[in-house]
Image (tube, rainbow, N blue to C red; front, top):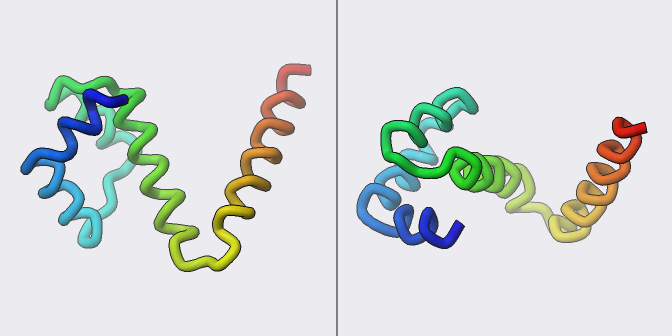
Length: 83
């Protein structure tokens, strides 16, 4: 993840972050971006998903608690699917 974060901090990364407010990348585009820019698709997907989550909770006063609850629910649901 560190290498991608360094990569995203250059001018290209700044340009992508500027575009964020104008257009949101779709899941399919993330795969394409990873191929074009020769970065790990899983790292890029993690950043893409984190950005989507942040946009939903950024103005909420209980955002941290909501993230904790979502993590618990996610882990529970994932465990139930294994059974």
